[in-house]
Image (cartoon, rainbow, N blue to C red):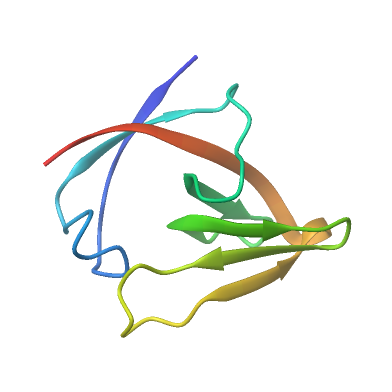
Length: 88
């Protein structure tokens, strides 16, 4: 039940670079501090750090300070999957 994605962009520098491959688990629970792949109901897909979850919101952190942290209403998030491995 895992899948691979190729990183595009630089929002997770210096940890993940453009072109890196990440392995993601849709079955492992994501906890604050975990690196995650989030897909919104609008189709946006991003790799971030799960900063905080509440009953109504999900807060995501970019490792690269050039990119802002993101906050989504939980109802607008289709999935949060934990990153379990990266090939750099």
